[in-house]
Image (cartoon, rainbow, N blue to C red; front, side, top):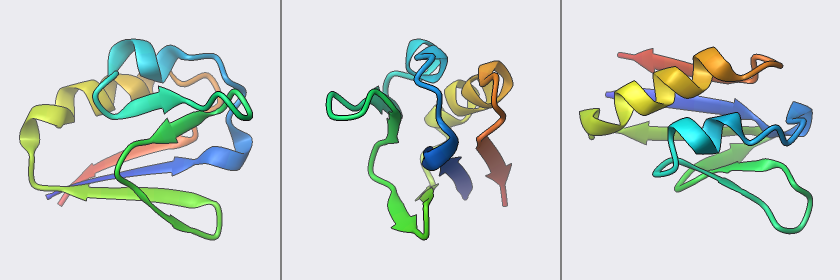
Length: 76
């Protein structure tokens, strides 16, 4: 199981996560911040739980390139 967490409130809208993982991240047209697709919001933390390991590499890349370190990926 892969768990991806995004602390959206701290997003600066750099678009790097969308460039490396477009299947999981998208920029919001409303506020210019990233959206973690198919995630659940819990007090500003957006979490995606998936058993699809094909998204792991892209999400790990997004975690690495994020300049404000608001993306966390765990393989549990």
